[in-house]
Length: 87
Image (cartoon, rainbow, N blue to C red):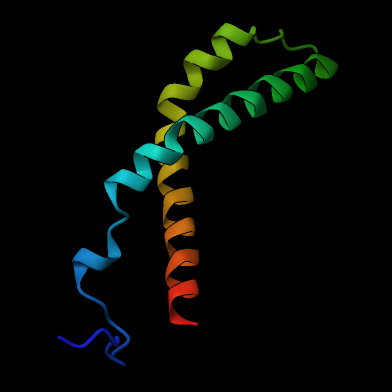
């Protein structure tokens, strides 16, 4: 088998999906980044009179919110890895 890539612009669906291992590796970092951003956003909310968000609440909210964000980050990192492989 040849290790060169085909010049066709459309890759098979298996190559388009982000690998699960990379997804699971990046999830803790992405989820904690979401938690920090939520907590900081809640601190800025206080300027307009909204209540502050506790760090524990930010951590609880980051679990479901971190899933789609992690998908985007994993696709971005996978694209960077593919681009590095092409050069």
